[in-house]
Structure formats: structure tokens, C-alpha cells
Image 1 (cartoon, helix red, strand yellow):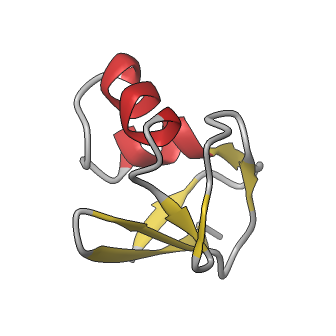
Image 2: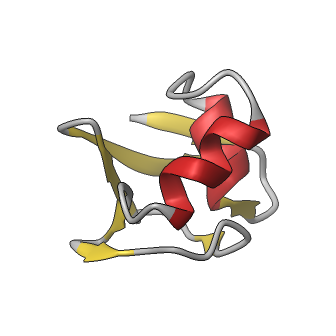
Length: 69
């Protein structure tokens, strides 16, 4: 489970926040390379806005989007 700020977060930013990648470039390559799933479907848009409850799958891990209060 990874937290985000109160406002919507983009998929590439989420991967950095969750420490899956160290840079935006790494996130871009993973996403555009079809290595990331969002709610069970391959997602290739790095600017895709995430919502609370979304599940991001990468490297065999499942990360749930949670908004901080």
C-alpha cells in the first residue's frame, strides 16, 4: 500500500513515490514498455491519473493507491 497526497497523482509520479523507480525516466520506460498494470489492465499512459483504491501492478508487486487524510 502506498500513500499519495490529497490531490490526484499521475502513474509515473506514483511509481516514484512508492520507491519502485528512482527517476521519472525509469517510470516512463516501464510504463510505455507495457510493464505496468492498472487494475489488471496494461497501462501505457504515464500521465494517467490514479484514484483511491486503484491497484498498480509492477515487478510482481501489487500497490494500492491510498489518499492521505
